[in-house]
Image (cartoon, rainbow, N blue to C red):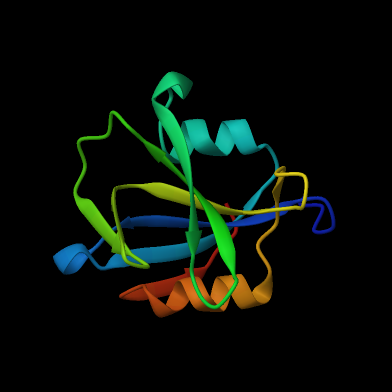
Length: 117
Protein backbone atom coordinates (compact mmCIF):
# COMPACT_ATOMS: atom_id res chain seq x y z
CA UNK A 1 0.00 0.00 0.00
CA UNK A 2 1.33 3.44 -0.90
CA UNK A 3 2.30 5.83 1.86
CA UNK A 4 1.28 9.06 0.19
CA UNK A 5 3.11 11.20 2.77
CA UNK A 6 6.57 9.64 2.27
CA UNK A 7 6.38 8.66 -1.40
CA UNK A 8 7.96 10.97 -3.94
CA UNK A 9 5.98 12.24 -6.91
CA UNK A 10 8.07 12.15 -10.07
CA UNK A 11 7.37 12.42 -13.78
CA UNK A 12 8.47 9.83 -16.32
CA UNK A 13 8.97 11.12 -19.87
CA UNK A 14 9.28 8.90 -22.90
CA UNK A 15 9.83 10.00 -26.50
CA UNK A 16 6.62 10.68 -28.35
CA UNK A 17 5.74 11.88 -31.82
CA UNK A 18 8.20 14.37 -33.34
CA UNK A 19 10.24 14.47 -30.12
CA UNK A 20 7.39 15.85 -28.01
CA UNK A 21 7.45 13.84 -24.77
CA UNK A 22 4.71 11.68 -23.35
CA UNK A 23 4.56 12.31 -19.60
CA UNK A 24 3.22 10.34 -16.68
CA UNK A 25 3.23 11.22 -12.97
CA UNK A 26 4.43 8.26 -10.92
CA UNK A 27 4.67 7.66 -7.18
CA UNK A 28 8.22 6.58 -6.25
CA UNK A 29 9.02 4.73 -3.03
CA UNK A 30 12.70 4.00 -3.78
CA UNK A 31 14.54 6.46 -6.05
CA UNK A 32 17.31 4.03 -7.04
CA UNK A 33 14.84 1.29 -7.99
CA UNK A 34 12.78 3.78 -10.00
CA UNK A 35 15.86 4.92 -11.93
CA UNK A 36 16.92 1.30 -12.51
CA UNK A 37 13.43 0.36 -13.76
CA UNK A 38 12.67 3.44 -15.88
CA UNK A 39 15.99 4.95 -17.02
CA UNK A 40 19.02 2.64 -16.79
CA UNK A 41 20.18 -0.41 -14.85
CA UNK A 42 23.79 0.82 -15.06
CA UNK A 43 24.11 3.69 -12.56
CA UNK A 44 27.48 4.70 -14.06
CA UNK A 45 25.54 5.81 -17.15
CA UNK A 46 22.95 7.81 -15.16
CA UNK A 47 23.33 11.58 -15.21
CA UNK A 48 21.32 14.47 -13.83
CA UNK A 49 20.67 17.94 -15.09
CA UNK A 50 18.81 20.86 -13.60
CA UNK A 51 16.18 22.28 -15.96
CA UNK A 52 14.05 25.37 -15.34
CA UNK A 53 10.52 24.44 -16.46
CA UNK A 54 9.00 27.85 -15.74
CA UNK A 55 9.91 31.06 -13.98
CA UNK A 56 12.14 29.91 -11.12
CA UNK A 57 10.79 26.33 -11.11
CA UNK A 58 13.86 24.12 -11.47
CA UNK A 59 13.58 20.33 -11.62
CA UNK A 60 16.18 17.56 -11.72
CA UNK A 61 16.11 15.41 -14.85
CA UNK A 62 17.69 11.94 -14.58
CA UNK A 63 18.67 10.38 -17.90
CA UNK A 64 21.06 7.77 -19.28
CA UNK A 65 24.23 8.77 -21.08
CA UNK A 66 24.24 5.34 -22.73
CA UNK A 67 20.67 5.44 -24.00
CA UNK A 68 20.08 4.75 -27.67
CA UNK A 69 16.42 5.74 -27.58
CA UNK A 70 14.75 8.54 -29.48
CA UNK A 71 15.22 12.16 -28.49
CA UNK A 72 12.96 14.20 -26.24
CA UNK A 73 12.63 17.96 -26.70
CA UNK A 74 11.78 19.25 -23.23
CA UNK A 75 11.95 22.84 -21.93
CA UNK A 76 14.51 23.93 -24.55
CA UNK A 77 16.70 20.92 -23.72
CA UNK A 78 17.23 17.86 -25.91
CA UNK A 79 17.56 14.55 -24.04
CA UNK A 80 17.64 10.91 -25.09
CA UNK A 81 14.71 9.15 -23.46
CA UNK A 82 13.31 7.85 -21.27
CA UNK A 83 13.93 10.21 -18.35
CA UNK A 84 12.68 10.71 -14.80
CA UNK A 85 12.08 14.15 -13.31
CA UNK A 86 12.32 14.85 -9.58
CA UNK A 87 12.22 17.91 -7.39
CA UNK A 88 15.15 18.92 -5.17
CA UNK A 89 15.23 20.52 -1.77
CA UNK A 90 17.57 23.27 -0.53
CA UNK A 91 20.26 20.69 0.32
CA UNK A 92 20.19 19.22 -3.18
CA UNK A 93 18.43 16.02 -2.09
CA UNK A 94 15.71 14.42 -4.20
CA UNK A 95 12.19 15.34 -3.15
CA UNK A 96 8.67 15.22 -4.51
CA UNK A 97 7.64 17.52 -7.34
CA UNK A 98 5.28 20.33 -6.42
CA UNK A 99 1.93 20.78 -8.11
CA UNK A 100 3.28 23.87 -9.92
CA UNK A 101 6.27 21.90 -11.25
CA UNK A 102 4.00 19.07 -12.44
CA UNK A 103 1.73 21.52 -14.29
CA UNK A 104 4.74 23.24 -15.86
CA UNK A 105 6.14 19.88 -17.02
CA UNK A 106 2.76 18.90 -18.50
CA UNK A 107 2.88 22.03 -20.68
CA UNK A 108 5.82 20.53 -22.65
CA UNK A 109 4.18 17.12 -23.20
CA UNK A 110 2.13 15.88 -26.15
CA UNK A 111 0.25 13.65 -23.69
CA UNK A 112 0.22 13.71 -19.89
CA UNK A 113 -1.44 11.46 -17.33
CA UNK A 114 -1.41 10.53 -13.66
CA UNK A 115 -0.64 6.96 -12.69
CA UNK A 116 0.24 4.71 -9.78
CA UNK A 117 3.27 2.55 -10.44
